[in-house]
Image (cartoon, rainbow, N blue to C red; front, top):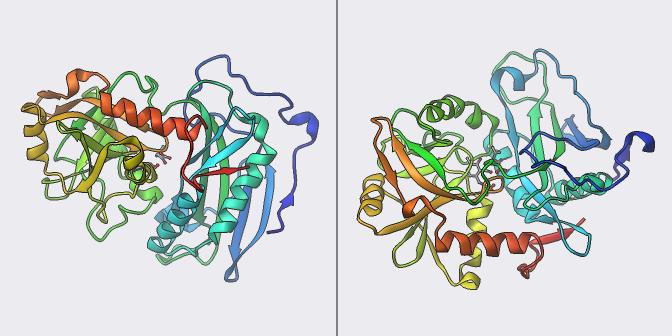
Length: 358
Ligand code: PLP
Ligand code: COI
């Protein structure tokens, strides 16, 4: 791919290493540049890297009215050798195309997506945050740009990538387990809908539930299926629990659950870590019973931003609560977290192809 580099003058770019003096928030900071490519006349064209700035969209752009937009979330890490590596970026590129199919958006060759991510990181590599637990968060996204009020797939699109030097998604980091609200009031996705796509609309639809969860001191809702029988996932991560025999259980991927790359990676690593990991439909009543009778000893969430987030308590609308694992980070969760972040940061040998040098 021939990328047109329209970079900031050197005097306006970061010129030295980025050593934050405070804990970095998630997703707030930006780097100097962004990547753009447009879809028009049936093809993706004009790939360019330009200074980070606002973009113009027509007031009638389909994305603004009907939400035809998808995105990805990935991370890059700097290792002791000083090099920056993306983590399983090929999986993100593949999932972007899966989401594209579901949202009637034209696909982008996976190699092109990966090359674009690497080219942008290369330009802004000095923005990598040198802080324990921080990383360069990568946000590729595609949105519908055609100026049209009819409800139909757009004829034109924009693909963009922005970068955010970020700290942990949950401000308390890994050490303090989070709380989730279990409620039958809201559902994230319906069968036959867009729940398995990383579609912007899924997140818009989750905001009300997220605000409701906050009233109970919870970080997110743990969504159930539309019949309120099975655990699905949380607003920004898959769910898992650990049974007393040390098995990690992740709800089976249905068309209402996002196929988390973190979940898939933990399943891929189970042999190496020496932990049995399986997927199955998880009944909410059996889960609650299991926590109460001690058959479920740990729980948490898997996600790129969330990494491996322990959950210590579930709250219900009637004010009752269910504490898991003494509200502390459990043994298995800790082992998975250490192995997983060890691979990302280059301290543990990565499986072939998981890390790509920028
Ligand atoms: N589920 C939802 C709804 C998410 O937004 C995310 C975040 O990306 C995940 C699960 C975790 O997916 P991944 O591990 O690929 O980041
Ligand atoms: C991610 O984990 O990368 C996500 O996209 C979750 C998010 C909505 C912050």
